[in-house]
Image 1 (cartoon, helix red, strand yellow):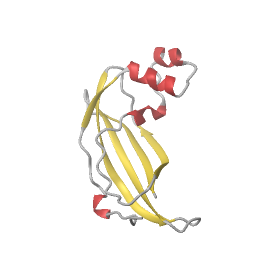
Image 2 (tube, rainbow, N blue to C red):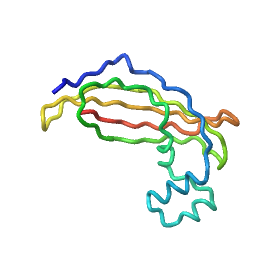
Image 3 (cartoon, rainbow, N blue to C red):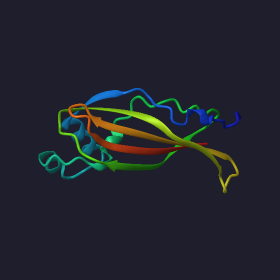
Image 4 (spheres, rainbow, N blue to C red):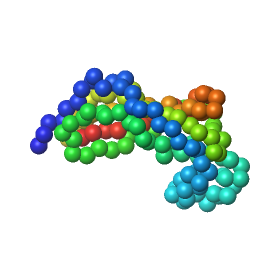
Amino acid sequence: MEELTFSEEVKGKWGEWVEEDFCSKDVERFLLAIQEENVDEYLKNRIIPPTFFTCFRKGRPEHGVKGFRTFLHAEQEYEFFSFPDYGERIRYRTRIADIYEKVSKRTGRKMVFVVFETEYYSIRDSRLLCIARATLVFM
């Protein structure tokens, strides 16, 4: 089995800018996927589910973790500043905010934690919409 390795040099590394339209159909698909019962109410009132920004995941920088057999999603956090309108064009990019290791108390094996941070902006007026943070654990 290959040893689990990583480099701290990827910390702070940014991915490419990605631009996408913020569409009501995407919100509707998301609501159906999470089995929301009041889809029409969300769409009529332009309510955006807090976790919806998770749908935008393109352009992540390479984390560089080697030798992992599996990984898991450990944490998700959102910091909201504003919400886009349906049909508004947004842009976002992701950076590796942190990367570190811990040893499992249960198995004694090394785990590598990678914290991704994504900033979302309105293209129309450049306002910051959201900062999303996600932690993945590689084992």
